[in-house]
Image (cartoon, rainbow, N blue to C red; front, side, top):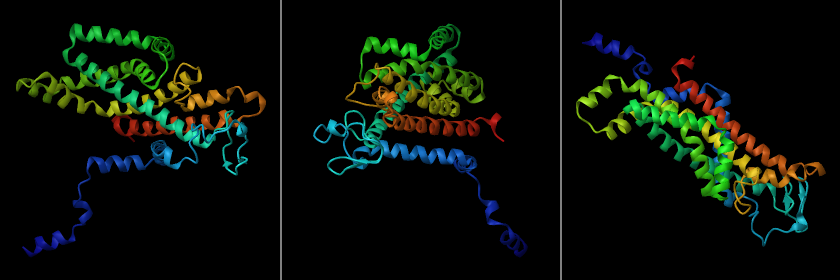
Length: 307
């Protein structure tokens, strides 16, 4: 008995610890410094977007605080009332730093909202197509093929020409554009999972189709869905910025980063570069950070890409 106790005391306690899937995931994620930095930048951007009214130097759309006399001031300039505009002002006299903070709220909100709604719709349709198969699968996938055969920007332009401007309108247009990507991704994963033993067991137990789809199939299709969700969120933000730049996205009273870039485009030839440059840099950093985090998630969640 004493020998067993001595052997137990000699064992390294760290060996007895069992690594959880979350700990393994975090360890793999932290191996890539670029992804860690991108995640930190993304968290900072989300923080700015959420608390823009509290941390912005001013409300750029408060007509009582904005004057055209401060229009097109270069970065670092001071206004007549002593306010310093670190990134300069636009043609209407609004501080670009504050405008970017407020623009991030709209861009991130539209991108995340459209991605979440499109994910829910597309995942449900993809699960139904894979689970029932046959004619149902054929009809759904032909619709998906037709949807993906058209350029996303063209479909969004046509939809917004019919729906008009507004945050709700552009979210609807982006959802219609994106749902097919999620449907195809989930269908491919669900086809593999459908023939496994746990689905057959659930079918033998006479569980309902809805329970099998959303409590058994869907959780096992989440890894690729998470990766596609991050990529499509960045795509939605860039697509919204493009539509707003073209003047068919959001109204001027609800400015996004794309609309801020459009406001300064007419001044580019007159050397007022900062009006479009700084919102463009903010948009670039946001999209790149989301894509880099998504790339690392893809490498971790896809066993074929693991080192």
